[in-house]
Image 1 (cartoon, protein in one colour):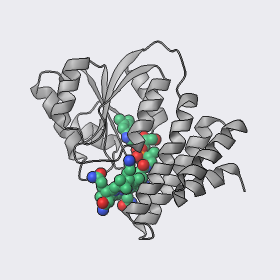
Image 2 (cartoon, helix red, strand yellow; image 1 turned 180 degrees about the vertical axis):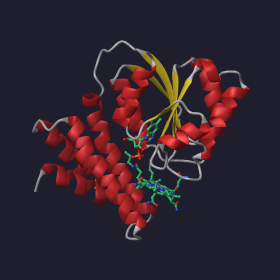
Image 3 (cartoon, helix red, strand yellow; image 1 turned 90 degrees about the horizontal axis):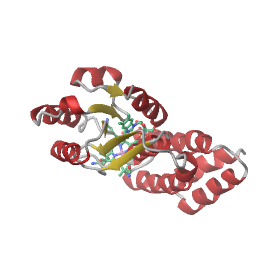
Length: 210
Ligand code: B12
């Protein structure tokens, strides 16, 4: 068995200690951090989602898998974020009000840092008003909104509206993403950038500065 198969299995099992050991082992064997992330941790969470959908996993299992994934991610972080890059811009990110999923958002934050952005993370369950206040306070180039639930997607439109009402819409680009989000949805609600994953989020954010 390949080490990344083991990493995936440990996340699915929700075994945080084993996940950490295996991620460390993979790094020691010079498996690139991006590959451990993509083919190990992220694939494992897709499988966890499938198990949840088919009724084999319930919320507690999902939660312990998420914890294991996060513990592995923490070990990869220093390898993913390139050191000593001067900030090329500023991004405020957060997960929509009512939504507690933060693994994808954290990954996007890491990749943005890796590409040279200063990242201000507002956390989860962030109201549109809080985004507006953060734009006033930090004056970012972009805001990044994450939603994993179809029920919290509409809050993204509320963020765009709140920015307009505060007269700030022209000062900041709005980037959105998360499993249920599509390019079309971004267009429909008047967001500027959509990206399907953390790597393309970083690339598109960077391109948007030009
Ligand atoms: C882990 C998990 C949880 C954990 C979250 C832990 C945490 N700290 O995040 C817990 C157990 C808490 C949880 C709870 C719930 N969950 Co949940 N969860 C998941 C699961 C299995 C994985 C999500 C994940 O982390 N994926 C891995 C990351 C890396 O991927 P990602 O989040 O998609 O992010 C990537 C991209 O989307 C993108 N991206 C993400 N954000 C952003 C932002 C920007 C700006 C950009 C550009 C890109 C971007 O880049 C990321 C990296 O590449 C998904 C299943 C799935 N397949 O998505 C269900 C899922 C999202 N959950 C679901 C549900 C129903 C729930 C609950 C309602 C369950 C319940 N009955 O209580 C609650 C809701 C709690 C709440 N209020 O938020 C459903 C949503 C269904 C729907 N259509 O809305 C899913 C799809 C499962 C399913 N198949 O039914 N969940």
